[in-house]
Length: 274
Image (tube, rainbow, N blue to C red; front, side, top):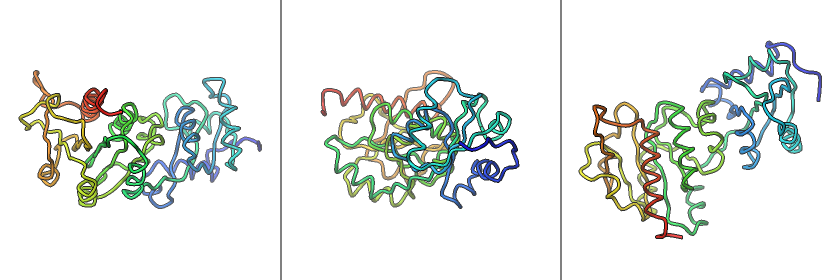
């Protein structure tokens, strides 16, 4: 390992911090991955990691050297940093001494078709329309991974999936299942082509979510935090369902609602599909 970077004005450090901005991620096709757990999952998924910044003084465990060695084997450039420089790089309150620059994974609807064809199960997907908050999108990915969903389609994006806070909130599950960014019209056509029912979560539905059959090929559709689903999507839904609200609030946090719906789908499918 070369001599540690000692200045926050180092061009490599400045480039890495620029990737916190969406315009830079879009322009370069690169993004940041910070944290042992996130990098471990990225490494398992063979994500192309261009550069890795490390700071031994910030390590929180004993497994970091082994992960660094594994990442370095793929030809990744590794840079040591003194603590105050790494703290400049980090976007966390409690950094753990690992931050990487990686290539974005471009997964398409066609790729998702291939993934579904290789699976013997009945598809369970999430379609997220214009989710605004990175933490919510990351949590949705985490829940999708938890129930072994077949993929997440992010439509008409407000937050891009490579936002550092999406990666963080997902705990690296961004790398464990197919995540597609697509426009709404293409996604609707793709779902119909594959005969995957659209199940819309809306407070205006007459049927509670536990009474809706989610055992068939289904895409659970969720909308924006503030306005919910647009009329375009609601008009395409074969199924509509609501989560009962017995207090003064009229809806749940979108990530919480998604978790409930996914686990209901899992509950129904147990013993039905192998």
